[in-house]
Length: 344
Image 1 (cartoon, one colour):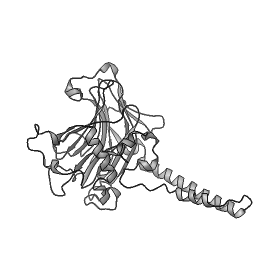
Image 2 (cartoon, rainbow, N blue to C red):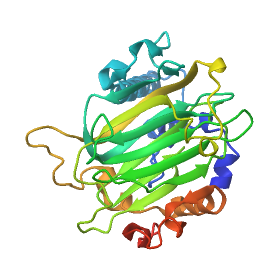
Image 3 (cartoon, rainbow, N blue to C red):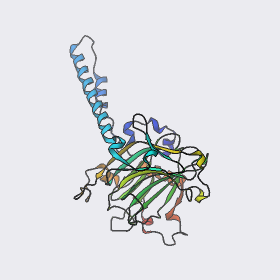
Image 4 (cartoon, rainbow, N blue to C red):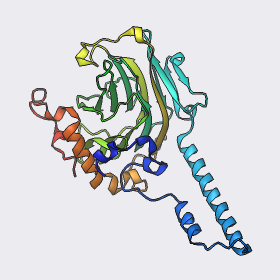
C-alpha cells in the first residue's frame, strides 16, 4: 500500500496487528480461526451437543484474548520498568493511570529520561505528541546512544523534532554517529501535524541497515557495506533516550527564531514504548554475534519490502528538504556511505 493511501486514513484507527512494521508480518489475529469455526456451526437451540461446543469455543477465545492482553502488557511495561529520569525530575509527570509521560521545558531547564537497559540490534518504538503552538527553538529529541552524554567516541541514532512558529510545519531531523562522528543529517517534513495526536516513531537496527520509521513508513534508510568501516554503528550497545530542551541558537531557521519563554512550559508527551531487541548483558553479552532467530535480524529485515520501497520513494520525492549526501558544497568528496543504495 502506498503512502498516499496511508494519508487518507486515520492512523489512530489501526488495530494492534497493524502496529507491526510493514515487513511482511501480516498474519491475522489468532482469534480469527475460531470465529470462522463459529460461523460454520449449524446451531440448534435444543441441542445440548451444539451448546457444549459453543461454550468450549467461547472459553478458548476468552483464554486467547486474555493471553494476548497479558502479553501486550508485559511487552510495554510501566515507565518505572523501562526508564530512569536523567535530570530535572520535577519537570516530569504522568497521567493518572501512569500510561502517558510528560516532559516539560521552561526557562530554567528541560527534562529527559533513558532506558535502564542497553541493547544491540532490534526494533524500538514509541508514540510521541510534540509541543504544540509556538514551539520555535524547542527540540524534542528521541534517540539511541552508547552513553549518557556527548562523549567523543559515542555511537548515536537520532530523531530530533525541530519546533517552529505557530502555523509553520515541524521539521524532523535524523542523524547517525559512529565513534563520535556525525554530520550525517537528513531533514524531512511530515505529512501530518505531530502536535494534534500521538504518532509512532521507530528504529529498526540490525547489522545490515538502520531504518527510521514514522507510523511504519520508512523515511530514512542507512545501509552497511558488510565490512569494517567508519560510518555504520554496529559494535556498541545503546540506551534509548528522550528529552525536551532549548536549542534556539540553531533549531529554527538556523537560530533566527528564538524561544518565546512567555509561552512556557513547553510539554511533549509519550506513551506505548515497545522494544523487541537483544538486551546487552555483561560480561558475556549474547548480542556479540548476531543470529537469525529474531525477525529483526532475518533476511526480510535486511532490506525494504516492495510496499516499503513505494512508500520510501514517495517520501524521497515529496518530503526530503535536506540530505547531506546531496550537499557537495559541504562535502566536495561525498562520504563513503553515500554510494550505498537504500533499495538493495
